[in-house]
Length: 292
Image 1 (cartoon, rainbow, N blue to C red):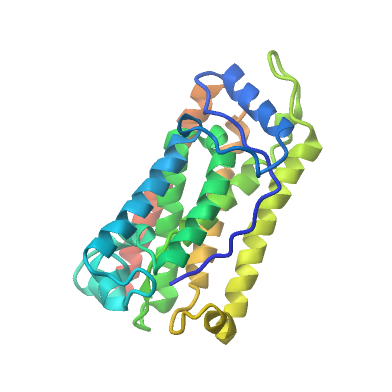
Image 2 (tube, rainbow, N blue to C red):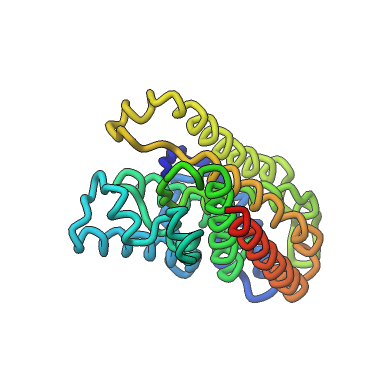
C-alpha cells in the first residue's frame, strides 16, 4: 500500500492536445509563458484524460464507502474485495485483473487525495504532449508495471497492494524524458520554440517530485512516517513506485525522436510503443506466474 506526498510543481500548465502540429506547438509555447502551477484550474476540455482518471478513482472510492468500507482506514479484506492486489488470488486463482483494478482502489481519503493531487498536477502538464490516448495508456501501463514489480518482491509476504501511485510515478517518468527533448526549443514554422530554461524548469520540477516521494518511501521503512500520520499497519510500496517510474522512463525513449515529426508520425510511434509495452508486461506476468 502506498501514500504520496503532494508537492506543488513550479511548472506551467497549458492547453488541449492539438489536432495538428501547429496547435500542439502553440500549446507548448503557452506552457513556457505560464510559469505558475497555482494558476486557474484548466477547463475540463484541456485535459480530458486526466480528469477522466481522477473521476474514475474518486467514483471507486465513493462506491467503496457506499458499500460500508471505512472511508479513513479500510481493512485489507475490504480492499481485496474491491480489487486490490493479493498474490494468492492472482497466482492461484488467476485474478490478473487485479494488477489493473488495484490502481483505482485507495486506502482511505488521505491516500486518495494525495495521489489525485499529484496525478492532477502531472496530468495537466503532460497531456498536451501525450494526448488523451497517451495519458490513459501511460497510466495503465506503468500502473501495471508497478504492481507486477511489487508482486515480484512482495508476493510471498501476503501484502495487499492498492493505489495509483505506481501510475503517478509512471507519468512522472515519461514526462522527465519528453521534456528533455531539446528540439522543442528550436523555432519552426508557426512556432517560436520554448526556451531551454523553461523546458529544464519543468523537467527539474518533475524530477524533484519523483525524488522527494522516493525518499519519503525509503524513509517510511522505519515506520516513523506511518505513525506520524496515524496510519499504523500501512507501508509505502516502494517497489510499485520504482516499477512505475522506470517503466515510464522507458516508454518515453522511443517517443522523443517523433515528437517534432508531425502529429501522425508521433501518434503512430505512440501506438507501436504502447502495444509493445503491453506485450512485454503480459510476457513478464506469464513468467512471474510460472515462478510461483
